[in-house]
Amino acid sequence: MSRVGIVGIGHTPFGRRTDASVQELAAEAFRAALADAGLERDAIDASVIGSVPEYHKQRSLAGVVQEYLGLLPKPTWLTEVACASGSAAIRTGWLEIQAGAHEVVAVIGCQKMTEISTAEVLALMGRVGEVQWESSFGTTFPGYYAMFARRHMHEYGTTRAQMTAVAVKNHFYGAKNPVAMFRKEVTAEKAEASDAVASPFHVYDCCANADGAACVILASEKRARALKRPVVWLSGLGAATASMSVLKRPSLTGLPSAEQAAAQAYAMAGIKPDRIRVADVHDCFTIAEIMAYEDLGFCAKGAGGRFVEEKRSWIGGSTPVNVDGGLKAKGHPIGATGVSMTCEIVKQLRGEAGERQVPDADVGLTHNVGGIGQYCFVQVLTRDA
Amino acid sequence: MFKWFGIVNHTPHTKVAAFAQNLREGRITGSRCRACGHETFPPRADCEKCLSPDFELVPVSGRGRLWTWTRITAAPRGFEAYAPYVLGVVELEGGGRALAPIGASVPEDSLAMGMELVLVPRVHEETEELHVDYVLERA
Image (cartoon, rainbow over all chains, first blue to last red; front, side, top):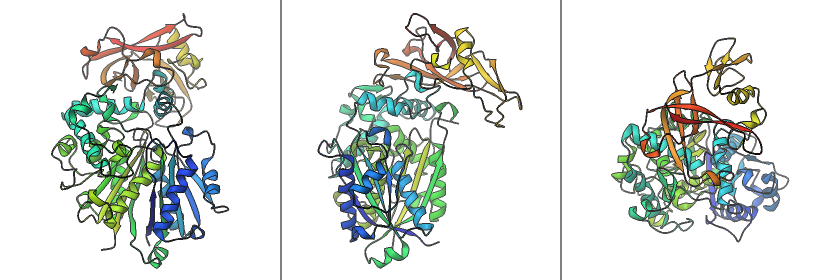
């Protein structure tokens, strides 16, 4: 099977973007990606928009973005799988090219979240849990992951300090990322003294709602090679789904969807987890990054807490993870996040990540989770040797 | 009348609506598939094993062991007045799991993994609209 290449990336600053509407954010990312690819707008055959519609007043966002970007009458539509919408959009673009329908597809993840209140966001996110038997008692998104954390601590002895170590690492690298929402380091003492959210989580265990957009331009292998620029290849993709209801999960110490999506992506790429040189994983909460180390095979089941404690996920460790700051410090504009992850790994594989560059990064991975693990998309990315 | 169920109800219409009437009468019920006999909690109209739509609601004890919990401080819209509150999940002795608030008989500092708890039906008739739910209390 011929491959699909990533030929252009664009990324807005993430954060409280009171200066821009959602389509204006999309335009920032799209314009940057076109310039990066050296393509004119006419070269784009179709777009796919990754976004979660409930956060916007505008209904049916794809059409608005398509019009604003001047891509009419090319086809577009929205993909929605909660916080994994961006990676689902990339998978859709990949499928469109592999099916032979299009040669060049722009995938845009975009989200405005700060136009609505935190309590409203908590209500919306809590309803990504099952609403008939769970959300009716006031579950929240942090509350669900807090319940995962409680089990992980109980079964594997994972500690409060190990979870804090994830926040400290991600803020350390976020401080070096010009597009991150929080560009400052945090000490373990400050993180653990922050306000309670859902026990055992404090504020610094949780990622922040943000505004932002990211774009990748995908091309068929033939078109990608013809551009005569560095190409990063989508060499492995995986996608899997787990129960909507937390009550139906076999365990709360990992995400079955992540394990399955990772196995598919590794098999397609023909590699094992130890070949990954840099990864962006879905650290919506500190425990989520610890579970990701395990689900992705970077360490043994239950060893995730020690993995970060021993700095094995820092640059210089066995598998550097979220050296762009992760959702934690970069911010989490939910529809944009998956596309942002792919942008970061492309930068790393091209050697363009500046002071957070991982040496010899030639194989990378993204792990984008929707909801409380109901959806997971994994990509293995490679460059030409 | 499933709109009675929960602190804030999001799903007024369901084929297992009689669950809420049973709860009002003090009975917690799960579903039993009439085709294959499979029982589930929470109840569902279409069997998760054989997909048969032929079900009945059957009593469950509500007794279970604590699987996990969290104390929610940052509450979603509609729950601000209740915060902070503790939610727990129990593994029921007859199979299935339930998520419910932890009641007054179980102080948070006494919570322990695997402790025995029981789902106790609650009927709130003092409010403008009737609602019913359940809470986890010491077994």
